[in-house]
Image (cartoon, rainbow, N blue to C red):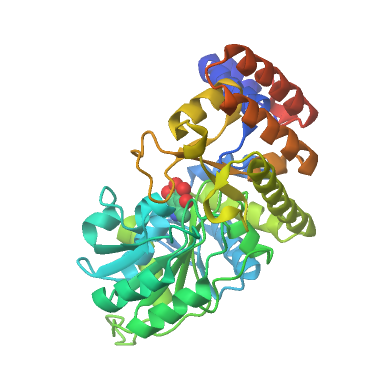
Length: 434
Ligand SMILES: Cc1ncc(COP(=O)(O)O)c(C=O)c1O
């Protein structure tokens, strides 16, 4: 990829970019929500569609000159429908948070009761955290995981649901290492007559290839990000397995026709909460969905899961405590309490050694979100680089060396060198490195 113009016209930013390219190449990226997109996705995301205003939807925009961005958005929608078996897709949300906001604002009214997995138990900010719009606009009743199993406590969920009668229940989260139990959630939602919304931001890539159960037909509405296991550009998306007439009796002003739920979702995304769509990103989503439809991507996601299982076993064999005792997906959540180190200290020591993870609350954590007792580790990015089970064993050994003596600079230096050597074996973005 040619970056000569940037180098010439803005050497300061060019250097910053090159330092980031070299950081991504030279460190082990174990943040579960990150990945490395292909050159094709990078090119489309950095392309001229960034110039285009296209408020509205394909075929009915508020601006002229949209014929080509229409083609790109239509392709993104069609490919996503095929990937997930969805009848309806909206690819315009700028991020996962926007997708959740639009879905919530379509299905529930301000002040209504919603339920979501507690943030400290693996949920996401947008699932009802008091510091987020979701916690401010709605009456939130959080559910939790069971202290023994680390999995959703369905006894608690049904008890709370019967008591509080939520209008909507959100399933899914940011640090839940197990399959999302869509069917069990559906039973609870049916009993209390609530809508069921799934947020599959994390396992979306695995859902697309059948390695994680599908949210359809169990969930009324499904949101996701496109940049985690799905390996697309940073962004969000909303889907429904089937479209249906809206149950609130909302009608089209002129004809009096009862609107479909898809129409309400579309108009909640734009003009409800967003303006002009990011057409370069939507086109890059289409590229990524095209990649995800190919057999290689299935093999990639299979390896992501195999690598995560291997990490889990290797950590457990060194007496690390894993929330839920393992993983079904691309991530493991480690409770470091028995190792006498906080999540914050672990993240910092590992970062010095060139290993990027994030501190994470564990269920029933006694420490604050800024300190935490745990770390979350994921395999999507390192698997994209081509790393397999052999490398997972090396990585766990390196992490263990650092965490066993986190203040020891000699160990950190030694591990840093081994990380560099390992990264050299799996080069990243060679075409754009200086
Ligand atoms: C489950 C879940 N939902 C939503 C989001 C929000 O995505 P974004 O950061 O794109 O707003 C995330 C991001 O981490 C997530 O993990």
